[in-house]
Image (cartoon, rainbow, N blue to C red):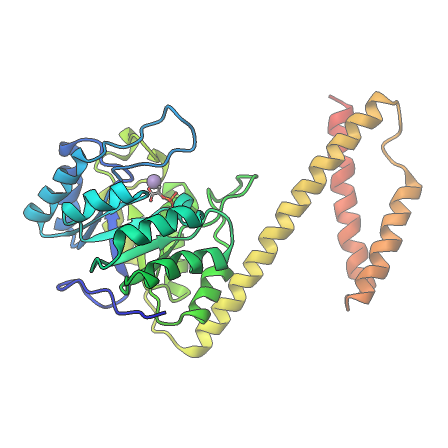
Length: 353
Ligand code: PEP
Ligand code: MN
């Protein structure tokens, strides 16, 4: 890819590049109130969605073009750069006309090559930085492909935003981070800036700070964080927004370590371990769900919970498989005894209900 550094005079080139602002522009007052507080705390780039992709119809879909004038006011009165999400050629046209400084492309849009091509065509020749969120599904090629389309249209100031990936089971995270994907992106395109969006990964205020730190420890270049003057009253994503003052506090507490080859490698490996542990927990919980279904079946058919033959079969089969995979037989036995014990406990709950 033909890349140039993102050119925003006056913005510190030291890590992290910070972009902050509300999920959505709701009113001129809310936008200005939030922007003034963020600017006072040293923020240089203001984000705000005006066209909002919503999972279901009937939600707040953004104020639309009206919000562009509010962003222009932010620019004029605070001196901050401004950015908004574009998802159609029409959005691009309006945003360019309003001289929005940076554009970002959302996760639902980057997953769609037709939409990406439409945006690339509309952006042809525009001298603007464009940030591309990862597609909702964990597909690195699709993410890179989206950026390649823009690059082929002459956009050289590109950045990637890691906002996590959708999953059926919402557990700790709103969108699973799967850190190995942005890490692989860094390996594939080393000079592409990568920005982390802890707000959409965590989905909860209290997760913003630890996710920011994790992103910094993994060598991310920047952070895009949702901040609202009155988070509880936000019209979208209320639970993950923080006030400008809380954001200031979070940023001040961040430890920015210098990148050394060895720590980066270690962190990369640790991220992979976290990924494995996450997958283990999710698989175990899936297994327990199936066990509970079996419990219901046994109850309906008056069967005993403990079917010893089946238990021995599991221990034998998995023991042999574990040895083949280079693990100690007693280690595998311990794990499966634990798993079995919890499965029986969960079935007992069903049967005694
Ligand atoms: C957003 O940044 O407000 C947004 C809609 O994000 P995403 O595309 O990551 O869901
Ligand atoms: Mn949001």
